[in-house]
Amino acid sequence: MIRVLLAEDQAMVRGALSALLSREKDIEVVAEVGRGNEVMRTALALQPDIALLDIEMPGLDGLAAAQALHEVLPRCRCVILTTFGRSGYLRRAMESGVVGFLLKDAPASELAIALRRVMAGERVVDPDLALAALSEGMNPLTPREREVLAATLPGISHAEIATRLALSEGTVRNHLSAAMQKLEARNRMEAARLAEQKGWL
Image 1 (tube, rainbow, N blue to C red):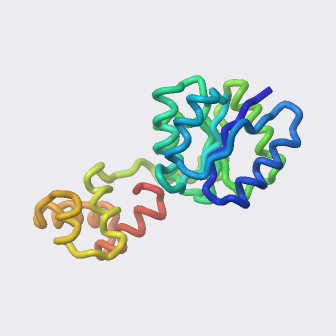
Image 2: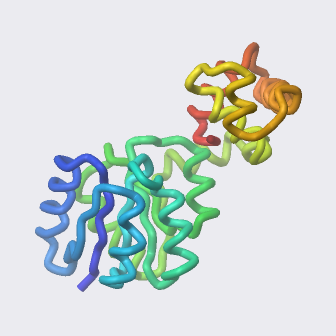
C-alpha cells in the first residue's frame, strides 16, 4: 500500500484529489493538510511514503516544504502537483529533492500511475515542462537579486524595499539594475514579472 500525505490549500481540490486516489486499491491517503507549515509535523507523525504537495500554500510553499522533508525525512518521496507550469519551479523543485513534478491539468488517470512510478524509484516530470526548462536555461539571478525583485512585486518604493530587507537604497537600486540587465527588462516591475513568470522568484 502506498501511503500518501496530501497538501493542498483549496479544500475542493484537496477533496477531489483524495477521492480520486482513494479509488486505487494500492493507494491510501493517510492525511490531508491545507497549509505548508503543517506538512512536516504531519509527515513526522504518520511517516507517509509520498508527500503530494501544491506549490502555493499559506504558511510555507510546497517547494520549501519539500526541501525540509528531504532533509529531515528523506525516505518520504516528494511530488509536486501544481497549476503553475513554470520551468524555474521545476528546477527549484529538483534542487529541493523532489522526485515528481506534475501539472493539475494532466489527465486524472496519470496521477496514480505517476505515484506508482515514484515508489518504484523513478523520477516523473511533465515532459512539456522538462523541455521548457531545458530550453530556457539556468536562472541568471543571484539569491539577493531574486529577493529584491520579489519585494518589488507589490509596487512599493525603493525606500520601502530597503527597509523591508535591511539594505541601503543604493544597494537595492544596484540589485534591481543588475536584474533588469540580465532579464533585458525596461523597468523593475517588468523584470519582477518576467522572473515570476519563469518561476525564478
